Image (cartoon, rainbow, N blue to C red):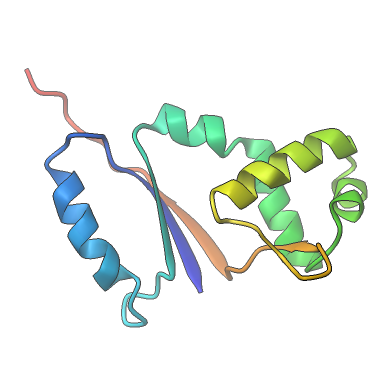
Length: 120
């Protein structure tokens, strides 16, 4: 399973095409099981900070664990890790088990940055 994160500016001509392609991209032939879009690189990186991306990597390596154990693993403050984990869960990049352990349900998370030319 793979997550694709991309920039899709609101109101762009790509928005309609993106919606049509989401279903096709989620097919096994494409390999993406989850798509997440942001309006700009600024929005993407304000939500997916380097610390949050590091949490994804740490969770992928250690497997399902409590937020407390994750905070210890990455040597960060529990409160900050809790906030970051909640944000990642909000975006669908982290899930919880029935035992309230957090984990990354994807083998890979790809961030695609397409550069758009501004209209003159």
